[in-house]
Image (cartoon, rainbow, N blue to C red; front, side, top):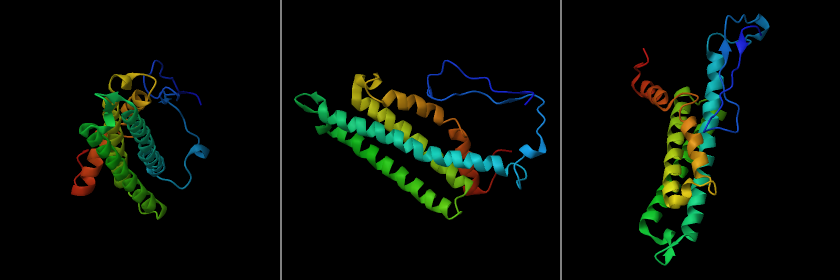
Length: 194
């Protein structure tokens, strides 16, 4: 359409496998046949946003699991002071906390999925899951990077790739702070946005 452009963002350090850019609408006239049928206001676009946020809540669990699995394998293979680093208390603490947080995120998102299939999931619940799970995955990636030591920054392991992607995911489909405000409004009934 005349006035609609999609300039692509180049030189990214994150989400490099996907095309990223802007949607620019400069005096674009939308024909009636392109308007969502039977949808008034922002209900349609926000419904799409909720679906994307729900997908992110699941997707970041996969990134966290990959980081955890890599750290667990590395902790069994890396020998330091005559034994695998997985035999040390602090490494076990990190791994135990990582799998606990992953499991909690899985349960949160599974329950949200049940509510969604019953058409009872609210946008605030979806925001909570997106915010919680992205933050959890970032923390898992950081702990996994520490377990890998200096090797954690190399391309031999998936940690930094996930970490860079998660740094982007924490801001798209609503930033971490916006989701915090959505949850805050849900629990208090007060709109901090206005």
